[in-house]
Image (cartoon, rainbow, N blue to C red; front, side, top):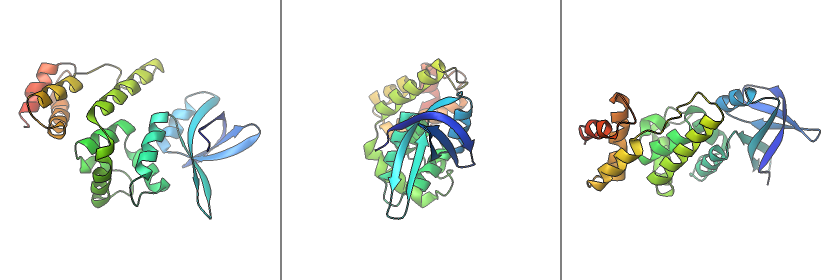
Length: 207
């Protein structure tokens, strides 16, 4: 119903912001990380929103990017995950980290999110895995990196060789999941993430 709201932040709490737009103050629930991001964006901000309606409550949930909003909606499709739980997941890991965690069966990473135990993480992976693809995950990751670079974000801005390494392993006959898991482990020890050959050699040790 409400795709986004543009206005100025007039009040901040631990869990929400009050955004004034058109002489109306909207309380929008967000992650702590998103609230910090908005505080660095200047006086006027744009927040992508999800309008949650129940018989006894109406609430707005907000996100800095459309990608984050999309992942939030995807989480809501998981049986037993409501808006608060979905926001809790996204307060612990980024949308990119969530996609890769689901695709690589990384229960440990997802269960780090507040209020998400091991069983819930396993359920989340089971229900979301068929809705995500490795190619889309990498393309969205690179789009987010480029957007962060354009915005002057201190996040990683260089293209690395992980996608090429995963594709090479898949071409050798390994599954997407095994290849992704091995490359993720290799990236933690490899010196230069742009070195595809180095990543491949390191990843093969885990396969």
